[in-house]
Length: 136
Image (cartoon, rainbow, N blue to C red; front, side, top):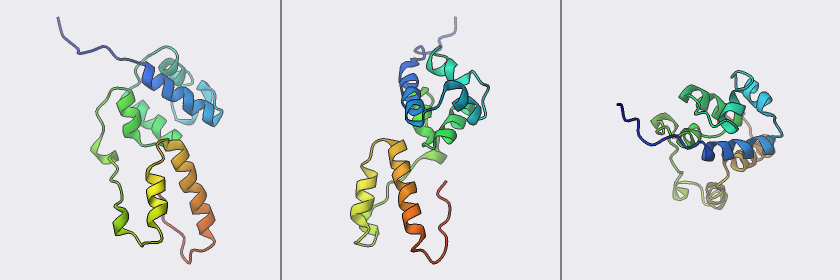
């Protein structure tokens, strides 16, 4: 008999998907299709407790605009080095920017943090002499 380790616990990922869908006002079907998955994929992960493949997790993270490592961990996969985020040392920034960066780093909700950063980029666009490089 092959030992496969502890059974997959679908609750953390299912709860996270439910929050994302509610915040974006998306159906299971819509999120699945927008992520490039089959139309029932998100329902299988959020309702039926099926564990998504790593590829599906990456597609969903991309669709929702969040760090893939967050979703990989919820689906009980190890994080991927390429998606490891390094916190910016506020001391290395100009003094007038430090408080803003510190505040943004302390926002635990990745969706809210992403929205705030996007809004700030829109506000700042009128003041820039050259367009910023895409952060995504």
